[in-house]
Length: 269
Image (tube, rainbow, N blue to C red):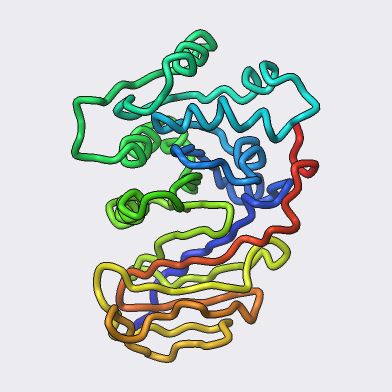
């Protein structure tokens, strides 16, 4: 393969303090979808410069965030964790939740007339048009609740990664993360070994890969063909602190998130 630009990846947003934010200009936007919040949701919230709830995701913030802080007043937590924007087709958000955040000054954008795009789509378009995106060339979008629940919702969320390949989007659950590795770049993935791994995978959804080459995995690929119905690199293991990937096809990268090392005490504001 010919030489190409390198795209760097790191899950440093899972760290209690995030030096990447200051040293490289990386900025984070958070989208909360309508699934259970991961245990590190308050940490992502603190790192984010822009916070959106996709429709019923607002119910999750209202109901579940106070549970992370059992020794504090629930109303105080709800006031502290106020989303900047609630956007979607508004078929899931409860009226009491909507009224609560409207009274706090949250911007509400009702797009019930648009049934051709998902709520995640709608939120990503808002972020792409935001001043945060215009100010930062290194904007990353973190989406919680994008995995788990109904498979058709999961498939729709994964499809969003392919719809916006030029936007850095990470889909997160309590157990793992997924992001797109565009074929236009060679990829270096820097592993936060205390927080993620060792289980990982490279998956060619969309089109087969005639040639994929990796380093740093237990079972590396060397100009290997991958396709559904044949070989795909699931149930692989991280072996090194840096993984490299080069492919002639867009690939999904997924890695497990460890149950230990992410405690609420690390990120209480």
